[in-house]
Length: 114
Image (cartoon, one colour):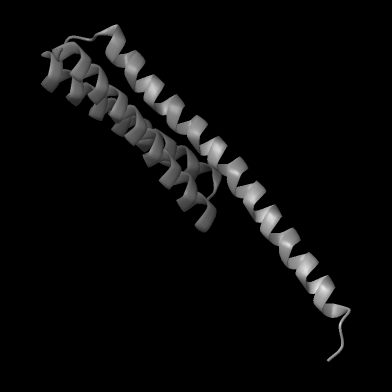
């Protein structure tokens, strides 16, 4: 049971790290960066990931590297990225249907004169 809890916590760390990178990407969209700034941000992100994962392994598992823990982190990151892609598709379809609904409403109202 303890290993399952450890796997779940490692999985959640993976989700957290993926969300953290999403915030970095959002920041990059809001504030334009040069190549050097992008490289520095990426290096700092991966250093933070390494430190956080090492700390998790040290505190939870006495520093022993377990393959399933690393796999759980990677699975958490991948799942988060896949959910993000799915949400983008749903958002795009919703946006298109609302837009077409508004356009059809305008066209039906535009033909009527008061």
